[in-house]
Length: 327
Image 1 (cartoon, rainbow, N blue to C red):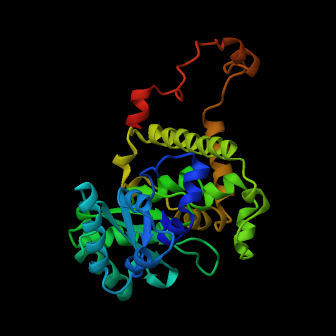
Image 2: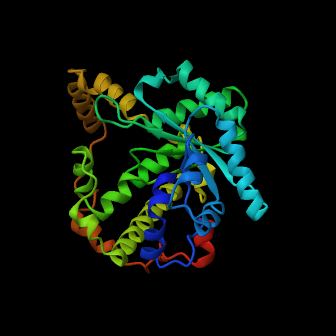
C-alpha cells in the first residue's frame, strides 16, 4: 500500500525508475478525506496518472468523516473509465490500549462496525508496538476474527495483517489466528538495508544505501526473500498435513501457546525439587527389575555398519509452474 499523496508526488519517478509505459495495476493507494481535493488541485495530476490510478485493484480507506462519500467517489471514478468497481479496504491501526483480555474495546468496535456498514471487502489490521516494543498484530487479528465470528459476519470480509511480520513463521501464525493474508513492511525494507530499522528509530527519512540502491540487486534480493518464505511455509504445511495455506485460516488449535507451555514446564518440572530424585529412583528400579544381559544390545559401531545409503528423495523445493500457482 502507498499513500495517495506519494503517488501524486512521485508518479513520474515511479514510471522512469521502473521502466514502465504505464503504472502496473499492483498498487493499493491509501486514501483519506482529502482525496477529492488532492485530485482537483494537485499540480502533479495529469490524465495518464488518473487513468493509472483508477485501474488499481483495491483502494485502502483510512478512518475519517464521511467515508461513504469517499468510497462512492472512488467507485464512480473507476466505473466511468473501466466499467468495473475496485475492492475497498478499511485501514485499522490497533494498539495495546484497544484490546483488553482478548476483547476489543468499544471505540475499536465502533470503527469496525462503521466499516462493516459500508460493506468493505477487506479489513487491513495494522498492529502497533506496545510499551515493551512488541507488536500486537497477532493478538489484534485474533480478537477481531473472533468478534466477527461471534456476530456471524466473518464471511462478509477478509482480514489482512501488517506490523511486525518479520519471518515466515510470523505469517503462518497470524494466518492461523484468523488473517487471510499478511503484508511485508519492515522485513522487506531490512532485506534491502539492515540499518534501515535504526534509521526509522532515529526519525531519519532514508539511509545512504537506500538512496543509492542498485535496483536489479534489490529485485533479486526481494525475490529471494519471497522464495525462502515460500519454502519455510511449505515445510510447515507439510508437517501439519496441509497443501494449501488458505486451509489454515483460523486454525488456532494447531498452534502452541508458548507462554502457557513455559508456565506449565516451570510448575511441573523446575519448581518440583523432588521430581529428578523420583525419576532417578524409578529408572534404577526398572534396571534392577529387567537387567540387560551382556552382549544383548548392539554397540554403536555395529549399528553404524547396518546403515545403508538410500536413493536421494525428490527435490521438494523445485516446484513446477502448475504447483507454483497452487501453492
